[in-house]
Length: 388
Length: 251
Image 1 (cartoon, each protein chain N blue to C red):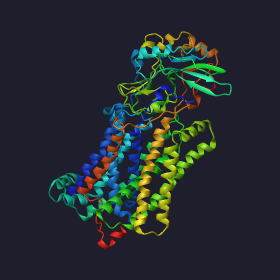
Image 2: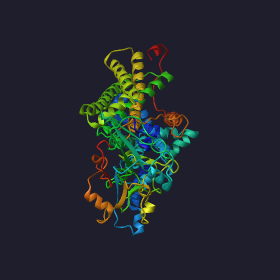
Image 3: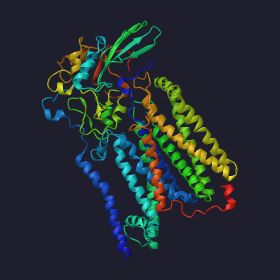
Image 4: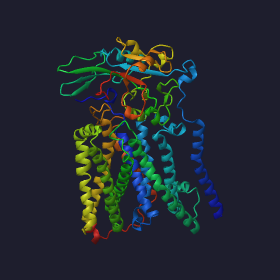
């Protein structure tokens, strides 16, 4: 017997609200990777430190876009900062987001000031833009360079808790809603943080390898291997937490489990059990395990790592979908489920979602035209091309 | 030269650092908008604490209340500020619940033997500790001084967080205004001394409305003398909508 409360026939939070935690997750993960180099001295990650920081920045720029498209009154969006209700978890968004955006912009400015100055000394539109960015100060002394380095390290360090806060907050937003048994778990925000790190590392590997293959660069082995190890480790923690969450509810066999079990067995069977766990968690786990533990030909290892990263990007998206949409499919009558799949061309539809998700990559490309995101990458010699 | 540059850069950074502070200060000055309900200005309604009760044993499922509510409050098609659920319990303990697919048609007869069947009207529970108020990021969900939980249309941003947070599923996003919408206990009526439309329309007196602050009010007397339950007490929301004769099957 399927009984859905009458106002729940249509889900309130659409694919846009799936995309929002997904994009902020990429931000948090990419930022943490850049901080591993800047703060924790993982020198092998130098090749992608700039790329990861700028990736965090461009994804951060677009994180609020799905929210704005979703809001009934987007022009009132600033009210969450002007007239906030501090009892609301959501009221924290404006402040946390603004603080984080400011921090990332400052970190990019300080860490790339030298690059901007070199660019500004040239001619053309890029130089003009860079002159504005460096506030028409085209000279740089060693003392300033040292100061910039110190400030960058400081900001990178401060950014880690802020990145966790930004994404932990999203998890808290769901985890604190007692009305929904699929969301209401204190593990939610921990799961969100770890899956964010997974998606952030995955997107960096995914892009780095593609860019390196297209440009026929010599791939920084130490960097890719290190990222693959981090990705493997973080995905194990993230997936274990996801499994622990559901196992603990299942084992307790509370009243809630009766309906949640039905939710998983019916509505979410494909997207949760089959896709999220069996295909997009298990296979990347094996691929990364093989790539990390065994000595393989670099071409095969890179292929496995790239495939695993691509699959983990989808895994995290599936996880967001299963949380955000899955929770809403469950009626508060606890006696039935509604259905949802986004339309193609509607305001909160698939085309808009794809466009929003593609835009950061476009901005990343433009940024790379002004300041190279992967400095000093040697090209492969002809003889090496078979190993790429 | 270099010191001057550093100084100017420092000033720019100071400016940047001050920006969030200015925003925060303006916030403190403005403050959240919760509590600024129409009850403040009216004055007359001060001292009331409106409550609602449903005697499930009296409800005959005629759906007049739902139609009255829709007409009175211009509720958009497909959404409901109130509805009535029909429960049928079979001999083997199987419970089936339904609501009419078309409110104008009302409940249709159903086949099958039920050992127990009853109707349960549902509305916003106007909780004393309402989750919707707690989660609204801009304070547009608020409780009027007379205990009625309302939405401030001038401030609602349509984020839908309150819709997710309400354990009773009584809120929805209005398809035209794109704001949160819900039962107001017909606030435009009760502040003029009238009863909510659903209470007026109920032919059996299953729906009751009254002042919990007035010990001589019929509702207060009923709640003093009769046994009642609230919906989902484990949520800690302390509803001010009370149910008489409620079956354990009802969530």
